[in-house]
Length: 351
Image (cartoon, rainbow, N blue to C red; front, side, top):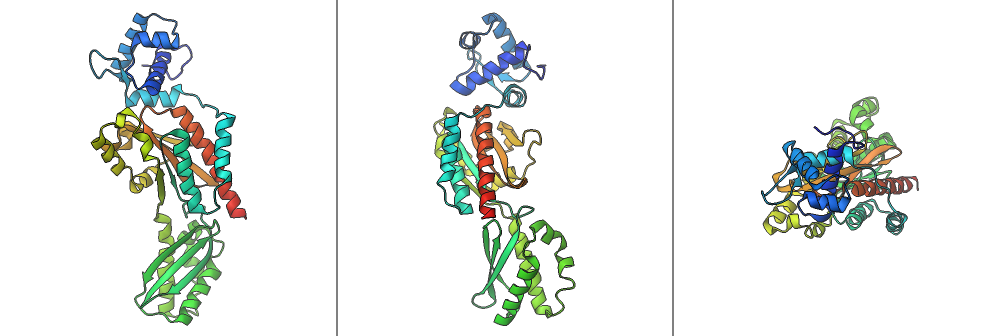
C-alpha cells in the first residue's frame, strides 16, 4: 500500500507522474515514456515493476494487454487527496477573473449566470453555479401581494440581498382589498430584518400575541403566505454553461454516450450534489467517476465550492470535466472565483 506521503516514496512519485501524464496526454502510460518524460532516476524495468504493483493495488488498470495503463477512480482519489499541491494562479489569470467581474451588471441572477460562463471559459470544462440560498444567509426585506382574477394572489418576496421571488397562490376564501392590504402590512411589520432560519423556527411564537386583531380567515391567509415564503428556501436554482467544452475531449467522442451524460447533468442532479457536505479541511468537494452515483456521468469528475456572505454560506459553484481533469488548477480557479463572487455579493448587499 502506498504511504500517504510523497517525499521519499518511490511508488507515490511514479503514480503521481503516471496520472499527470494521462491527464495531460489522454494516452495510456508506459514505463519508458515515464522515465523519459519525467527524468525519473530509476530504470525502465523498475518503473514497469512498480506500475504492475500499482495495478495490483487498484490504482491503475490496463485496458488491453498490449497497451499501457490508465488511472482508476481509486488512483485519482489518492492523487487528489495526497499527491497534488495547491497551484498559485498567475497574475494574468487573476486579472482575467477580476476584469470579468468588473464589467458585470449588479443583478444577482445575471451575476450567477456570468459566473458559470466565466468558470467554463477559464477551465475549458462545464461550469455551474447556484443562486443564493434563502436559508440562514437570506434576510427578509419586503413583501407585496397583488390580487389577480378570482381568489388568486401573486406573492412577491424581496430580500435584502436584492434577490426576488414570485409565486401565485389560490386562497380557499376570497380576500377583500382591505384585508389583503392588512395582511401585507402585518407581515412586513413582523418579518422585516429577520432571516429565514428565524422565521422558519419561530414564526408561530412571533405571531402568537400579534394577530389578535386579525379574523380567522385573514389569519389563515397569513399562515398560507408564510408557508409559501418558507417554501422558497427549498428551491434550488442552478445555472449551467459550457457543454460544448466537453466535446473536445476524447472520452466523450461517442455521441450517444455524450447525449446521455448531458441529459443526466441537469439542474435537479446538480442541486443534489450541491447539497452534499463540503470537505471541512479544504472547503471543497470532489466527486470522481463512480462517486457521482450516476452511470451516465461516471466518466466525469465534479468539483464544488461554496461562496459566502460575511462568512455564512450563500450558495455553491463548481466544475464538471473528465476524470483526468487538471484538479489542482481547477481547485485554484474555483477558490479564487468563489472569493470574488463572495466580495461581489457582499458589496451588493451593503449598497
